[in-house]
Image (cartoon, rainbow, N blue to C red; front, side, top):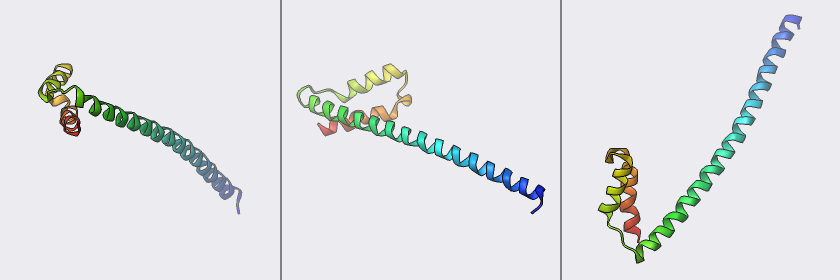
Length: 93
């Protein structure tokens, strides 16, 4: 193998090594992100359970909750998921 070809192979191997290092870093970052998402979902689920139990003893009108959300965001179109969750939470009590 010529020196030129050997240097080309060495260059490609260096690039592969660098790329593998980046993949390892990305995988570690992905694991951290997935852990954070898991923690967040557990927090939301526990909060939802507590709210549903509290709503049994302290009823809330859906219209009032939706009006509060709309006032906070300025427009109902900015929070369609939040408005939908009001109905979901109140239906689960």
